[in-house]
Image 1 (cartoon, rainbow, N blue to C red):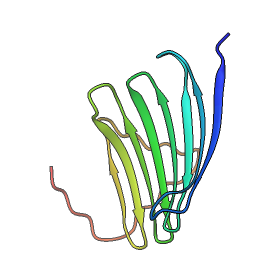
Image 2 (tube, rainbow, N blue to C red):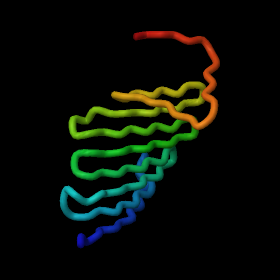
Image 3 (cartoon, helix red, strand yellow):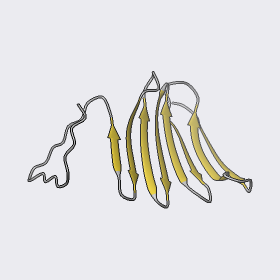
Length: 107
């Protein structure tokens, strides 16, 4: 059983705000952090060389999943645009999938 180290940091400096961390010792332990600043909320989870980072701002949400080689699968959502980048992509529905708009193939 690992020992958890839980911390809450308060910092008034620019882009610091409040940081909440839950850490453990060793590479096999998942480590989490939540940082709230005046501009964004960032949640991070790490286990060994893998990491997931979710950043939310007033006008966007970004999800990045990094592997050992720091290659990312990403979903970036802004006001009028969603970008998805990954090695493989599948879309499943138990009902209908509808796509509307101009289709552009960049193959």
